[in-house]
Length: 309
Image (cartoon, rainbow, N blue to C red; front, side):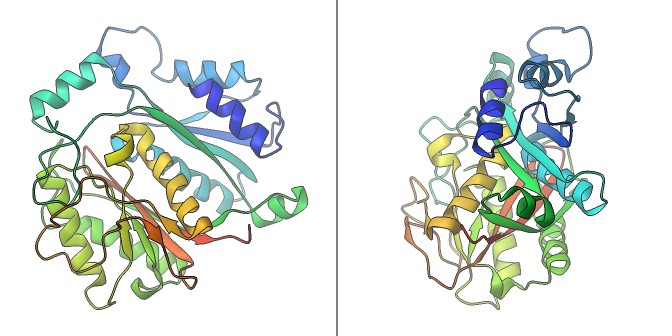
């Protein structure tokens, strides 16, 4: 899956797979290593995948649980701003394994009936698997290549709850801090955000913490951004989800349409910002946020602006 998706993104961006200028950054939860003892470095599979597509350099690997896919974009942003790279191919890959399924069952995070984020009947998540990669490059590189710019990555920021291995901070303090820092770095305000791709796992603790974050961030920015999510349709792909949702946010901005929140019938009380039922967004909406909240307290915020394409 990693190799196939890598080949696809290089081809789509008209980049040669053996171009040494390209930095490859891969995120995952590495959950397959829970199923059986595996000798050797944890990034062996990622190194193998990049070699098979013909890339000359080993990849950078992010292993920050559910935020790993998003963190690859944050790493790319840092490399580009520091002048360490001009072009980065970034993304996340993850698969469902028996150990992963059993672990989440033991934690009580799995739903028996379906993922219904931000609904009063929410009772857990549904596992998924997938892969997504994006090309992140400097404006000068994109212009020189004649690349199609689907969106601009205006800002990235992260924080850590430091509360527990799996439980989110119910106050949402560190998540709010990450989003506010991202807004400051990009020179935007809550009123500038038109869409918000939520982590939206459908678990009671995550949904309630994220709902508190929305209220604190956007209470004075009525009506606030339209909130949507992908996990009700695609499942929670853990280390890949941040990259998949970055793609979803870019596509929503490009096509001016947000996907619906599957299973949403009765929104959580106190949510005073729009929740997507699927449909067009205003022509004036040009900026959106994608937020991921990973086990271990990893919070990552990505802020995109619609490109010319």
